[in-house]
Length: 271
Image 1 (tube, rainbow, N blue to C red):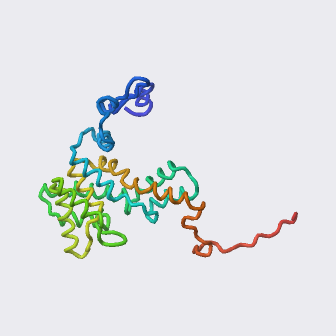
Image 2 (tube, rainbow, N blue to C red):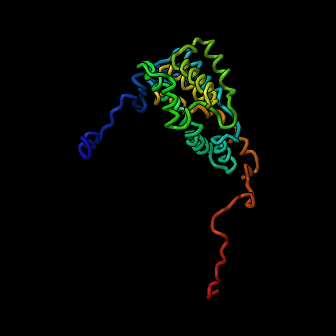
Image 3 (tube, rainbow, N blue to C red):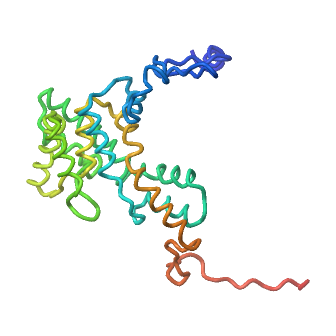
């Protein structure tokens, strides 16, 4: 069924298994009364429950909180934070600034795109290894397809200051023995032992931990959506406290222009 028949089937009615708002009465959130059954739920617990329909334990939620916390950098030189700060500098609203900054956080090279590539690679690679394939074959195939492996290497420095704190916490919580995390370290060992010399970065670590928490690639993507958010408001606020338009001003003579040269416009006969 498609076309008008498909649309006709859904005309005038909205059916949802996720939730319903009954004005003046109650709200259903995945089959539970939000203000009764879920009223004491931690916000992150509610967020991932909305994504997955599953409830996570205290130690799992502690790790999830840390994944968000450990990459909340209030540095406006970072590509997404800069957008939020520019919004403050131009006196745009905070909501528009944060929304735009979160949108560009999906950058395919070092943002959400890499997170997706990393978890999809781990899930796919583990399945292939369980079917008898060799890890190095998975690595070579990924490199042939993308010339890199999501979560390994870093544009500025071949190392990541977030890894050890998060691993330390994962060990203390007993969440460092999952098969995807082991695979992530095996991949790093192969890359360091070969000619690629790429170390694991935060994307690989959190993707492996996410997979070991039972998150699918789509669930992990939605869970990681706010991961940079806490670092954005400080830059927006600080830029808004300074004179308008003074964040990263660029003089015209600093712009390298390679387009058409300056043209002389003839005067009109009527001038």
